[in-house]
Length: 425
Length: 215
Image (cartoon, rainbow over all chains, first blue to last red; front, top):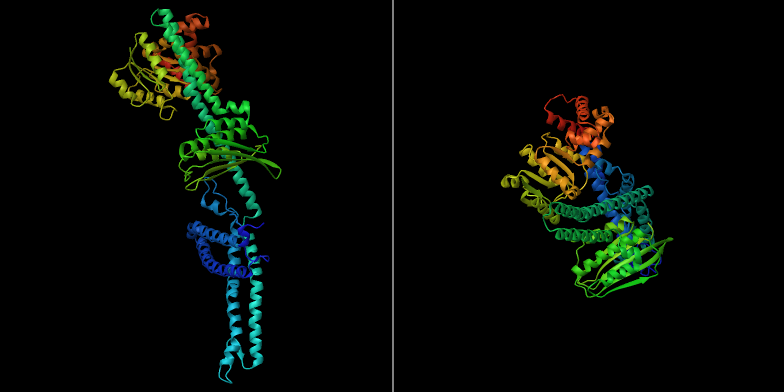
């Protein structure tokens, strides 16, 4: 099975339409030549900055030069990626917090970027020129005999060689045909080889990939810690504002009642009733806080029934679809439960939907079980993820456990939140 | 006595006001935040303020900062600060001006009504009253290098009770010794801490301050 991108790639021998493949490959080589010319300008600027750096002032331009090279490489990544029909990842690390420009430049990508630039100048410009000149000259060579024939007798026809006889005319025609044939067959192959070589220079190197992965893992862990401490602060706030103050009130009212007993003044029954109310409030608050820490439904019934209860609580018909369930870690259950609850809140508040569906599917990926959860509604769509904090809350919960969140909400709907995460974490 | 209350929890604020009113204490203002505490005190000609540390908008230490501000504008204005948990730094901040008339209690002490009323009285009279919990925490943290390390265990006990605002007679009763023995201990404490001034009341405050500085 081939995806649409595959059909668009250069130089694939099994391409259904050879003419289109040829055109694409030629366009690729021509574009490569232009990129090489652009690269020459970039190189000139880099050399200038390097030279100025020897006397100091160039260092001020180092960031600009690095940015220019990276933008050029980025454009090439896009162009070569389009030609190959696959995305070429960027090797640059997200800037570490507090890292200065020097550290950002020195992330190990410079040699490969420079190699790509030089490759483009040294190989790309000639290839681009040849990809244009060969067909033009071949057509000329083909046309030359006709031109000679049309000339008055005895006059030679000259282009890049002189035709004075039928023999030479035939040779020119053959050379033209051979040139076109060579162009026909060689261009896709050369374009493919060139694109692959460039891809190797532009894609993240092995060490870069490791560093990228390490950095992402670090960010994941940091966001997990942030989420954790934010949770702890929230719980602490809840405990203080609600439960602790209620208990202080209980103690205060009991103390007041004791005092009333001693002094014989005041309505002891009323004071004790207040203490009773305050203790009931404290218990209710405790229950609410416990539910926020780990929902009792989750602890007692498990993930699927707990999600079912969330669905039942919705005003609009909400169905829960379960496919191939497998065990999940308690942390995953909690993250999914709160995320689905948040997604359902968004559906109820903003979507204008009349039905909602929750899908849970468990799949195996390289031996690891993953759970994919989707909340879809039939509302009017067009939701801006940047507007509410709900989605970012879902993201931080899911990403903290090494999962991913995808959000789609085209105008007119439907709106869908897709959460995928490993079952164990 | 005219008292201002600043406490964000409605139930606690009203309960406290009712409790004080029943004891004949005039609650001239009860606010849900620390905003404009000084103005409120001035306008209502209050004698003492009871302030919760943690109040809106950030629920960190608004109350404490308001109390400090009042004390900066009116040195020695009696201030009873209530806190949800022990924070020795807060106690240190409050006592730093050495003017006395400061109370720092855990919120739940409100429940021991008679003690609480006594604390209000003592703070209004200019004494310093620290929550036993605060004092214990401070004692535990005392470093070996501090001047307090020179104190004997018994002198330490005495200082601890002093810091809680007890009078010599109370301390003697608490430790089951004579008042004369307590006098001797206190003299030793003053000497060891280098407090040679003979303004009797002031030296007590300084001894307690030494505590807080050395934590």
